[in-house]
Length: 299
Image (cartoon, rainbow, N blue to C red; front, side, top):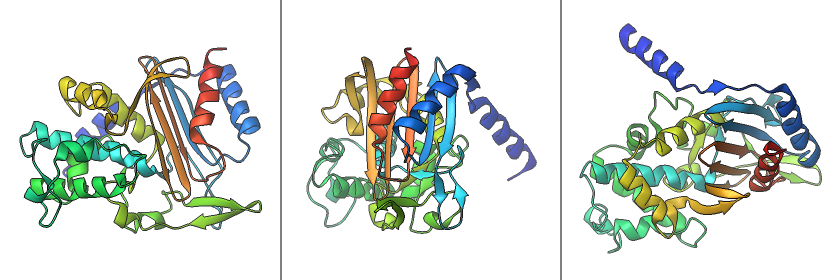
């Protein structure tokens, strides 16, 4: 990277960093909930309110065998939350006229079924077959763009200058110290879990940090990734393309949850609030913990 581009990238990264609204009493109260009600929690939590971060903390171990703790900068696999990234990448290609929602899969992937891109996007992440549908969408995106799907994501969903710690695991990222290993508890002992991430491209292979996820949400809801009409149509779809929309924890919200072997994740977005919980152990439901933290914000 040239010196000028390096300076520009650094400047943009600084501009992308949200402000802090540090309240020691609130931080202690939120930390107490995690320490008391989710003693086995291992992962990272970020809460932003009115555009400023009010809580940003990590717990547990990223690599128990190596003695590496989780940090706010640790990357976590987000499992089926990856489908939201895939949907945005596909819709970005639609907006640039490289795809159309009524195109069929077989137009781009030889031997693929005669099924429209719209119907592939509309499958609920919780439904059987959702993973294979989104894996097919990843192949369609690559064929339509002439790039690898990772390059499509970098350009159209991850906005790499702003999300430098986010990517797709091709089977090697899990060996990096900055990416947490996934665990399950067996008789009180942490056991590492492995997964064939490369086989889950498009459906569950993405990893990110809480900060990167906040940048992505800010850009998505700020119409920087998609135009407002496209974004609104995405949320209005029956499946929400991986999002739920309605009353949640006492207010109108957008939220999504993801799972993968050894990982769980939950994100919630309101006009005045963003909550991100990324976890690398299956002992504490990320969504339930998020609900407790949101309740504490009202006290």
